[in-house]
Image 1: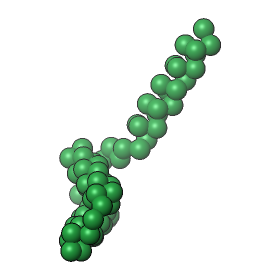
Image 2: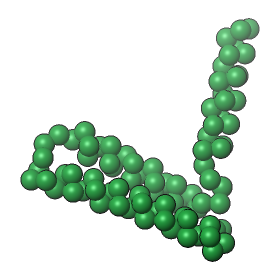
Image 3: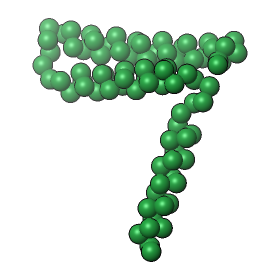
Image 4: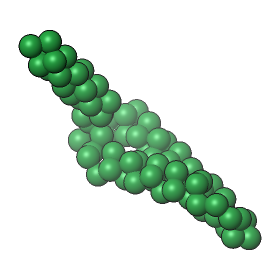
Length: 83
């Protein structure tokens, strides 16, 4: 019985955390893009090798894209352009 209660509590906590971590007025595609950008950055950061500096340059481009998404969201909020 205690295990079932613990599992139920964990399920509720995870569901609540997921609910509050996503911003409902940001299109799902933007959240998906953010997730993919983070995954790509993490993968490249752990890829090893320098590749003539191009690997880190790619990571910097991904970070720039993440910053652009943040700026776009900020602009949309300020101009009430959220869906």
